Length: 207
Length: 84
Image (cartoon, rainbow over all chains, first blue to last red; front, side, top):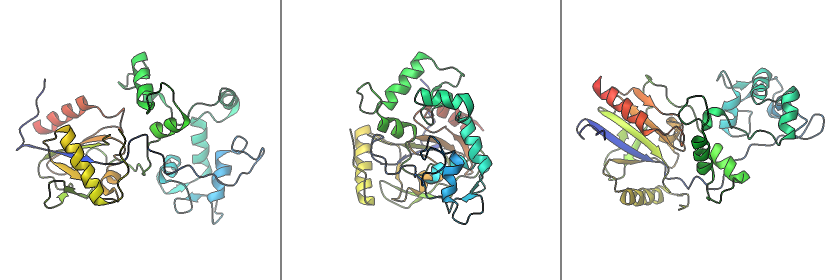
């Protein structure tokens, strides 16, 4: 078993998010703009047609300030990260989700692929294939109440667990964010941008 | 086990104390503020691992958990950082 270096070299901090269990009820839901387009429902209107309802100034793009939904949904659409979602970006998202042509009809006929499911989400060892073990682990993790069935709420909670905005992770090689946290044992706040020692941050929820 | 969302910093601190005791943690434990400032800065929810080098740069960042929460990767990154 590998051992970690002694304490003088290493400072490991456990940052507890201390939030409710992963199965806690979601506080945010994707906003539903006014229905429009042919059919009058989400199945008939394109993603851009639904997003246009957020374009308050009618300039043809939806800014982050105009968007009334959760930031994580906006960030998912804003491919170039410029704070504006264009029709091209919305169409690109829809294409990746198989939202056109025969693929779309097949998806609707079978109930649609669950939103957010990608191979990468299930492929734990990133070898490009999903083994039975990985699929079983994925199901077990998603099945919050352990009843052997995935409810719609469990699906939403596990695949989109961010009741808080996800944001963008700091890149490797970049300067650590200038934030502070307070030691549970008391004392001065720890400035994580100036760690002075090699530091491990473990973010987790405990239940 | 389910824990109610803490509404105050004090409540969050109590949960942290319970966790520390239950897990018999000996490493320093830090508690985020009620605005989740640190969690947001590190896009940490629900689980994530990082190694910060002594100069304050990010030496390693895992993918978002639970599936990105890989301890072996963390250990390898930590050993590499300490060896540099």
